[in-house]
Image (tube, rainbow, N blue to C red):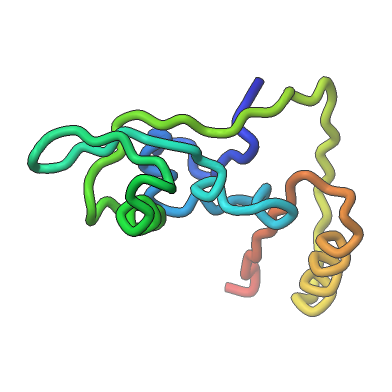
Length: 125
């Protein structure tokens, strides 16, 4: 079992990714990683507090994407799914941004990918 969505930056703890939305190349067909969390322990100045959406919705959703301004997430319960047995990784290179952008939009629209990312390098310099 693994997290439904991983962030592209793996040097943050789970709490750090939740308070930073958890955006990645996996979030386009689903939702942000932070939206898949069910409850978490929040470290506040006055002590620890377990948060779930229906007990304190304002604080729960403020902590999501709050960049640590409302407390530090020290424990979290997140959604899990079975891990795929096999993956395929394809690199595609472009010389025109318009083609790159068009193909990324197409790949997102066909609903067949679990992960998509892109990079742009300026080799003219």
